[in-house]
Image 1 (cartoon, rainbow, N blue to C red):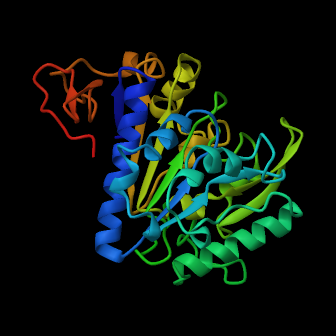
Image 2 (tube, rainbow, N blue to C red; image 1 turned 90 degrees about the horizontal axis):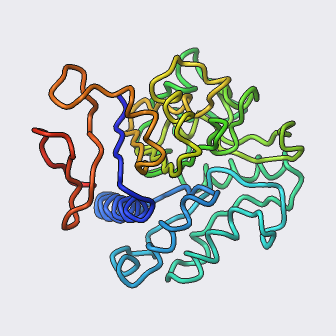
Image 3 (cartoon, rainbow, N blue to C red; image 1 turned 60 degrees about the vertical axis):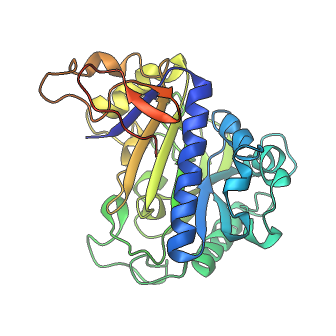
Length: 301
């Protein structure tokens, strides 16, 4: 069952996502000396990035130990208004003491295929390939890669932040595209017909190999699609977000109440059998408190 946490509004959602980021960063840095994260593009995570750059959150992270990647990128110049890198740089990266060498952007200004190959090489350099993540030149044994791959702690991202589009896409895995079922490469470039544009994206190979994968979804415009992704039949060609199924990691959905309106219709009332893992929640003194009667309070981290 999906770990879905519902917050009253977009502000409390952004705060919960920032708290989760800080918590995971501290744990990873304490355990392994670094925190490797892939950021999402789009408008939804902007508020979270703004909080992470604030005086409240930024001092709680040792940014010298953080390596930043991206889940996908548009094939544009880094200063282009549509660049995912530009968004993160303006609202977060320019405001925190992170070493330039720890920022690993997708070079959208290159030929798309060259950009994808270069980005996989950069991921391999930072993460270290260990046989669980096979490169394109080393086809995996049947069943070892793809949506149910099982990477070890070496060769995996600590956290991938994802959004979900109104069509059910995530990263740049769009409905009906071959990238959804990629089982070997970590990064691919593909032309998205519906957009009339090239995209470079992480594939399910590396997404499903991460230690933590977290969706941040907000707004009533995503409500019906969220219900279909979480409660509908498994059809990743139609709803690519469904392909995200970490084999040996934690998948969490952080959503606001507006986005959860349709999904909640599919949830058993508190006290019934098969009730959701976590009922709709509200923030109280830094903790996530279930609104379901009789349910125990849980920490947002």
